[in-house]
Image 1 (tube, rainbow, N blue to C red):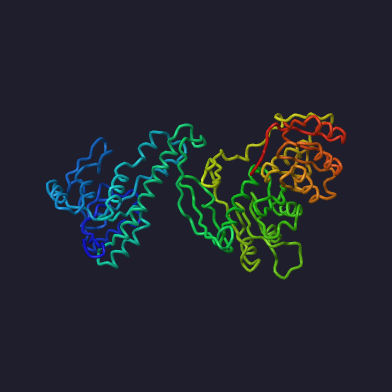
Image 2: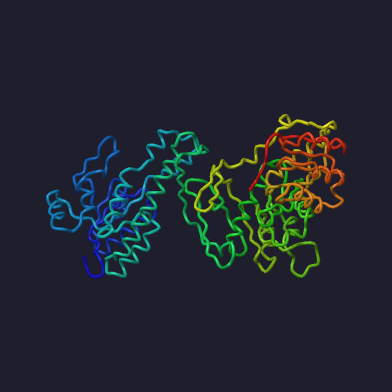
Length: 535
């Protein structure tokens, strides 16, 4: 050991599954006069590249056993990694005929790739579990006082910088930092194995909830500018972190919340172009129509003032016609408003260029690439994690599941609009109320739009907000409520506004009085028998 905790790297073992950057890294190690020993495939790759390397198995006389399952799980190798430089330990290594290892370069079998493969059974998953690699990495990390561990290709650059600064040596501070990184990798690896193999499948709520997440980027700032924030992606799953930002300013913490909460709103409308306008995670308008441009116009008209500084999300391709409507057009006198974020699965090139030019090039354009599939909805409250199965909004309420307790029954078109309104109110912050209407072609509801969306502490307060938003447009429209009406007062307000039909869960002790109120106004009321709170 040299001064300041410096240790010269003289001997290294290399055993990697991911060979990205391996040859270049090993060539630089050779330049520092590092003696390299490598396992099977790693040895072959380096040998073919002309790197001076010895076979670990041959050099240490380590037998490969049980169909290759045992390659590195041998005492001489792990003694070389774990040994302190005491006379006693060095003497033991001498009796084994091995030298102490100064560096371990190792990454693991790609279990995540096997996990993501469709139809992969236990047999394939089990064979993708690395045992020897994590054991070597943990051993090197435990002995960071003397050994440098390099657990992933992304660290090659910093390791080479460290060796260059210190004449082929590493500092204790650097080795400790690398060891901590390595333990995060082994923990993540074990977490993916647990989540991949646990009983009940991915959606079952386990006794232990293990979450491993990798940092994707720093957010522009936190919920407010005085707080720092970062974005992490849960390992082993498709998440929104894989989406692409095509244009605009850096996303803040709140922007990521808006993007995530907005995406679900347009799920389940594969047969139409659906658009939602969202502000602070709450729906200000929703519509579906034959085109994205028309759906946006209908959604925006629900509450134009609320859309200022909001998010626009669609399930369809954004073309030039829609891009002309979204976001503020500098210097133009039109009805466009300032828009923070536009989210869509695809954009025409011209549409991106147009959106990029708006609002001093700050409008954020995000392309959704792939559907997130993490099975839990998690909330962290005062250090406590609450977990529930994530809602699949592609699964809709079937008409056969509802009942109609009122004297007046909805006709087919009213029922279609009620069911459409129900799908929207499921995504409104509770207590949620939606006033909406639609139009038909050939008996099919092909256009649908909200007129008022309300959320409040009290059910009647949410109804009032939605009706105020709707104004006179509520006459002839339908209403959806995500929870039951505890009193008849909400029905009285809806009746006075001449709403044509109501859908709600039912189940209140006051159901009889609520139904009686609906009968007084001649309003058909549908019970879903399922609640749709969203907190």
